[in-house]
Each structure stands twice: as C-alpha cells, then as structure tokens.
Image 1: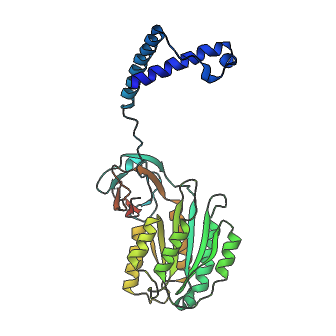
Image 2 (image 1 turned 180 degrees about the vertical axis):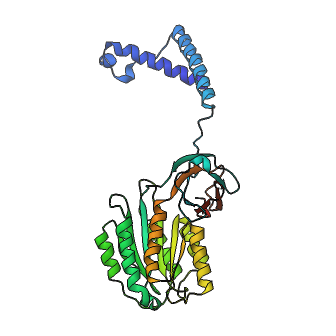
Image 3 (image 1 turned 45 degrees about the vertical axis):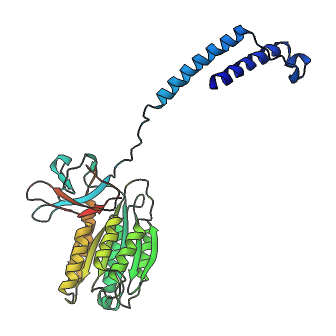
Length: 341
C-alpha cells in the first residue's frame, strides 16, 4: 500500500513538472491536467521508491545509535583551613602535596584549585550581642569591632554587614565596603534585653549567602556574646546546620570580663566554632577584645584554600565528614564537613 501511494505521488509530481514547462498549467485549469502515465514512467517511479526505502532504512538504522549522555558535574567542594605549629604560629609555605584529604572515607577524585594565604574575597557578618548583660563591656566591643573592620576590609573586594541581637535579631547595616557606614551603625547600637544567640547565627548565615558572587568568596561570622542563649527559637545543633549549609565559619568571642560565663555556655560556643571551621576566643580583659580581633584578622589572612572533586557524591543532602592531614606536629583547623547539594 505504501509503495503504491509513493509511486503515485512521484508520478503525479513528474506530470505536473512536465506541464509546468509550458508555463503555469499552460493556460489550462488544474483539473484539465492529463494524469495518465506510461509503463516506463511507472517503472522509473517504482525504482525511485526502492531507493527511497533503502535510504529510509539506513536513516532508521543510524537513528538507533545511542546519543551522547549529558552528565551532571559532581559537586566541587571548597575548603578553607589554617595550619599552626605547636606554638600556635601560622604556617604559610605548604604545598598541595603536603596534605591528605579524606571525604566521607575516600580521597578526592582530583584537586582543582589550591591557594596559600588566600586572597579570595571576604563576606563578613559582625554579630553583636546587645542584651542587658553586656553593658559593662559594650563600648569596648563596639570600638574594637569598628577598628577590626577598618583594618581587614579591602574596599575593592570585601563586604561586611552588622547585626545586633538581644531577644530579637536586627540587621542594622546591609552589605557594604564603606567603613564609615559600618562604624556609624556599630556606634549607634544600644544595649538591653535578653539573648538569642542561635537565632542570630542562623540569621547572619542566611544574610551572608544572599550575595551572588561571580567567584568563590569566604564567609565568616564574628560573634560577640557574653552569656547563654535564653530566647532563641532554634537550638545549637540547628544553628550549626544552617551555618554549615551556607559554608559560614563562626568565630566566637566569649566576652567574660566578669568571669560569669558557665561551663555549659563555653562548651556550646566551642562546638559552634569548631564544627563550622571558626575559632573560639575567651576574652577576660578589655585589652583582650582588641587582641581577639587581631587574632581573627591574622587567621583570615593566613588561610589556605583548596577545591576538589569528591570521589563519589550525590546531591541528596547527606553529610560528608572531612578530615585533612598534613605534616607531623602541625595542627590543621577546618570545618568538619558539608551537606551534599
């Protein structure tokens, strides 16, 4: 049946083509065209059908060849870390070959980037406890925080914001590299109220990730607080997860000038900083506030940065624990893992 139809179509086309040599239907109406065909024309048309069938068969055969598979690139993990000797001094001169990375029990597929004393842009959140209990040290905190930002921010690449919290969390200065704006926002802070540390960490993490950077940036939260959380809507573990999901290191300055901070508070703040790749700093004097900011400044300027492709990872939200090993007698400090996404 297909053969008959195709033959008729070919013959009809040939007839119309012939008639068109004398002009469009040679002045005749289309219904006057002669559609009778000779045996030779029919034979030629059947031959054309055979050739067309063979070509169609070849096309169908070639269509069965598998197309290239589009594969999704596996997640690339970005990791910042510091290396210190047994005196606590930062070590800067190590190479990629000096480190061994273990990602959920496996070495990486490959290292894609490495940089010592990273110059990657900084995204900083200064998070200041303004509850009643900080009144005795509040002015020292504000003065040191403003001085820290003036010292560390590079106007061409870095950004910072300011958050204050008591029982509520408030963004008092959005992202900027303008130190005058940041200093003014810090100077205007007033103390009073209770303490919602974990809400503040969660809020700061979510603010930091809002910046859509064209290149990788380092995110850090500088948390100044002096007391245990008593008003947050989330707990310590939830605050840690938000910070880890958003790859934010939390540096905790425990303001303990009156020696009132309890063991439970200190344990929680150490854990928060440890798992996110930050540092816990116990401040017991007014000079200690300035010294703590200097230590954070030095640490941020001494970070190594490495990117790698994990050997196996699916974007299933599972937690991948990371262990980085280096030369003996050196301490390597980094976040404890990431959530696959």
